[in-house]
Image 1 (cartoon, rainbow, N blue to C red):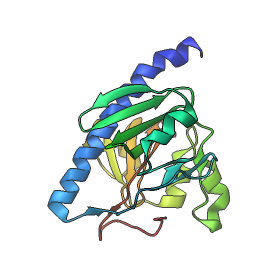
Image 2 (image 1 turned 90 degrees about the vertical axis):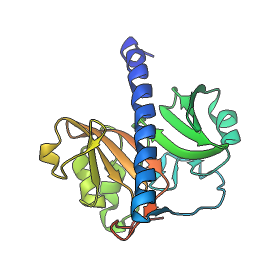
Image 3 (image 1 turned 90 degrees about the horizontal axis):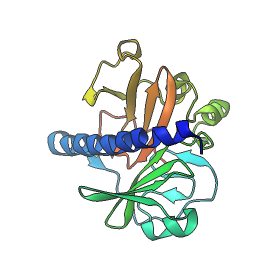
Length: 206
């Protein structure tokens, strides 16, 4: 691993922890104020051993709500970071971080460009395959549309991308997927449980 890669690890860790905390707070506010509720899912089994990201469901074999006991036997020893109400498993070799609560996977944070979006729209299958870390955010907008919540510097922001500056996050709550963006390029993809609400488009739910 290069020195430049090593120097970025603390930044990525801090970013992941901050995003996890912000997402938790925002979800709690939604649940409390708007009657929004998470999509209920039974305990899940690991997904296929591929490099596909399925919004609201999985990244490779790592599947939301599956037992965390599967992670280290498959990916090797993780760096563990305790957090309020959860534990972070950092798999630096694979550039994947996993948040776990009560031994169940609650979110998946991917900075590995080898993981690509699974085909969720046959009409734009070629575009889906291009959505990955390092690709242009315009591909995301073509597939998911503009029904996102934008966030910059930890706060809700204007919905106009031109007003967001160089670094921001697009939350697609109804699909359970979130995109970190810097200078119009995807820097991370985060998979979470979809949040169902009348105001959110759930057409892409798995």
